[in-house]
Length: 391
Ligand SMILES: NC(=O)C1=CN([C@@H]2O[C@H](COP(=O)(O)OP(=O)(O)OC[C@H]3O[C@@H](n4cnc5c(N)ncnc54)[C@H](O)[C@@H]3O)[C@@H](O)[C@H]2O)C=CC1
Ligand SMILES: O=C(O)CCC(=O)C(=O)O
Image 1 (cartoon, rainbow, N blue to C red):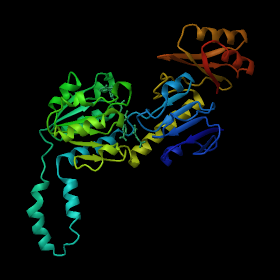
Image 2 (image 1 turned 45 degrees about the vertical axis):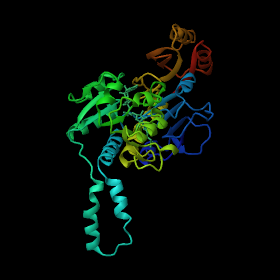
Image 3 (image 1 turned 120 degrees about the vertical axis):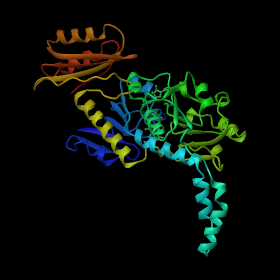
Image 4 (image 1 turned 60 degrees about the horizontal axis):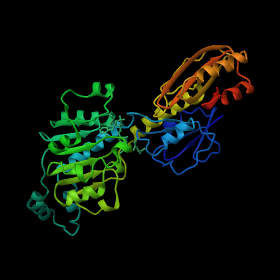
């Protein structure tokens, strides 16, 4: 029986993928084989030795100590693209909120609770409405920083609305470049993007290189009156610098999914409580995707959509055979050493695959019969081998 520990609210449709004849799934469980979580922060928690994989039902993995887990041979999965449409739609809402007097206008209308005469109210509305006038998105320029799953959808939607779109992504993958509409103009650097955009939206991961990507220095390049949208992560924007820029009337508005004390109570900040991916569809997509990936890893050793291990898949060999998987430091000679252990114990190999990613290598070896405990211990003692499983 495999044990799965859940954190946060995970869509039942995803949890139902785990066949209860083979899986126990609970938020409170001892010695789990895997975790399924959303934004729960794992940095301050001790990882039980039983955990073989962590599945983040979402895109960002900054709540998981990925480098530390890699050293322990723990595979970290995410759900690339599975919540991108949900975020795109909220970014669109953010741009509309930033262009029109929707929130102040509604707040004002809702405050008129003392008025009882409808005709009087209508007269007052017509007299006051000019203070809530805005401008249209058509013809304005949107800057998209990060052109991955979310950024590319936002760019496509903005083009459909008649906006001009400028993109910046120094790490753009070939696949993502193919997905991008050809009308997206390329900015050479962040400064160039900031200087020409009426709206700027951030869709980069929270990693060391993007920490305070938007700071006092970069905000000096921002076009006067621009609206900044941050539905990526709190750490990407220096909130203090944003407040200064808003006070100086350089930035007109900051619209984000990450409230911070210094941002609250201002008319020029709209902060939402991290609801970018909070739709039934996104929650289901993410949970189903990671549940399937986690099961395939636990049952077959295959790896798809990991952020720290290579993509690996191998068909299972004939019935009666067994599968050994192991990961090791990515140095030469380890696989050869393991194969000699198998040969020394007369274990015949049917099929195998070996892949590496950065400092880690991962291997699947199908053998004719289940290996003895002595064989498994001999593999575990090979220098640089990190973790071994027989499945
Ligand atoms: N508000 C919310 O609820 C959600 C927030 N997110 C956040 O959005 C981020 C992006 O999500 P996806 O688009 O799905 O990820 P993705 O991995 O598909 O795209 C990220 C893009 O950022 C680019 N990038 C990396 N460093 C960069 C830099 N320094 N400057 C410019 N571009 C850079 C990458 O090359 C990649 O194309 C996630 O990492 C997460 O932090 C994601 C989903 C929901
Ligand atoms: O699970 C959530 O609600 C947060 C989604 C998110 O931030 C992400 O996928 O990176």
